[in-house]
Image (cartoon, rainbow over all chains, first blue to last red; front, side, top):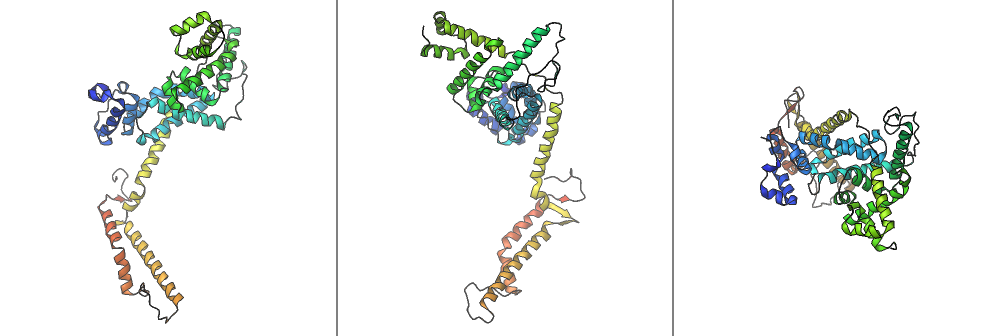
Length: 231
Length: 175
């Protein structure tokens, strides 16, 4: 028997706040031990899957890792500029989620909580490595230190000139986004690349929605001016 | 149209797309119209920032670190209870430990009594209401044991807990 959201009584879906509290009480550790092994987690809200992790369901944690691995690494790559650092930070995020599972309260969306942990780790890393970071002008012959990849101009679909323009644009985007003030940078990354809404971003950054919107507006105005030669 | 409050309000809503009133404003404000085009171009340019593929060993490394955390949590959960339930040669080790602790408490208590007497001096006739029995006296020993009776009886409850044996496998004896 697969457990799906349709199995929940209708009243539980009418009030998300009390729904999750009831879910927490219902899915106790003892009950989790007798739940069937095959559960279709994709039919559950992420917060409910995390509540199952809290109850001891290891498969639920695996599901969350597989679902958020790629977007989380992408977010941390853009905030740190380095793929190895991004993966290290992403691992730390998941491990902190696991360690905190027994105290998890579904009072906000799971992604808000997840990205709050990720944002804090990213900002701490940025502060700790500020003096080490410098603008890197990559040459075509050297591997990109952030990815380990070499720039391949041998793609027959694009000319060398097009490749150079593309690389220059990418370097400019990285440079100017990384140069934004901390919270503006995180807000842009969450809004543009993670496609999070204002409410989620506000929850992560602990700001009001209007302050978040204002933050984003200023960030994009800055980037519009700085990237106008690269459009 | 001069750049003023209305223009800033319109531009701040670019993030939500172009509403009807914003579109009408752009028809009349060249500056805002250029700002809107610039905003769309910026968002399109930002799309060029791609990310590399994650390492194929990401989850392997994560699961390895996760196992370490689980082992730490399991060790922490066993903690003092494993120590108290541990038996050596069939004897619960907490018994001699408890006896040693009580003996130490007795020794400290009697030593304090002895030092009090030495401060007062031998033959001192001053009698306080809190006079302690002499060192090694049967009455003194019985008083100390009586004051710890509750502790001694509580320790017996540990006999009811499952036993960890030094020679047993870890899978047989569990909390």
